[in-house]
Length: 332
Picture 1 (tube, rainbow, N blue to C red):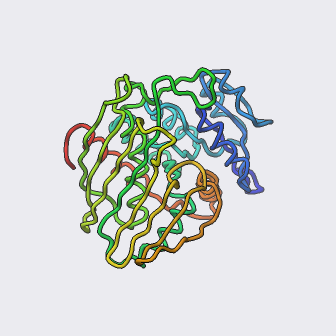
Picture 2 (cartoon, rainbow, N blue to C red):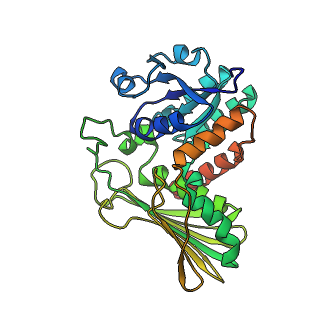
Picture 3 (cartoon, one colour):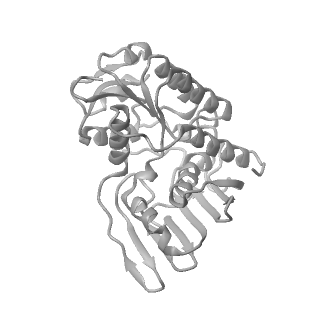
């Protein structure tokens, strides 16, 4: 890290999430500077709107970029392990997109690699950082004894989906690269968010998978139910088969003295609404900081030694194992 306290960032995997959300967030963070970009597709590199960053299809060259301190990994799930292990070996901190990997073995291996190398590893659960969810976490004690968390997080993702009308490699519906479909892509956010809000994680989980609308080799919908050790019931409905024009994003935390409802907050922007019922509804204001920006600011400060990263990679690994066991037909 430079003597000025600026953290040099590299982005590995320059798809639409990196281009449209991660990069703008990093450019907005004080103390962060994008110094390197890596993707196997030269066209993807060229579509990244940032000046002064080294662009390369060669991983070793990317990791040896002068001034590189931290790497954001946003390649398809099956490629996480290789990139994280290489970044850890090069001494770079890693913020890895969720899920940690396409399978449990790779997830364990990449966590172990960062631990051996003594580098910081974080999972990019951006919903932790949505300002409505941050505000909701503060409101949870006002709800009394929490009995349930209910999450609906759905979208429309056909096999030929494209974010901008241009040809697009929709790897999220490729079982080999994604490790699954709607459940492995969207449910990790709900599991993490439930634990973040409650202060206790889901420890028992089962899943029903659905392949009903789209003709591809992964699930296009799932219903997951579970509970925490303290007895809070948690349900997640996630889907790639809900048209975007319909209501499809809702978070409810139910307690004995009230209920909090967040609508259209599950997503990459800071929009939506938060309402507290006790029992009359009261609109709750929240900040407008984009969740990606808040996430990168926190990780940048942790890499710089200004603050501590508050989320343990071992806990994220436990949640990943729990989800994969449920998706394979088991009950954890």
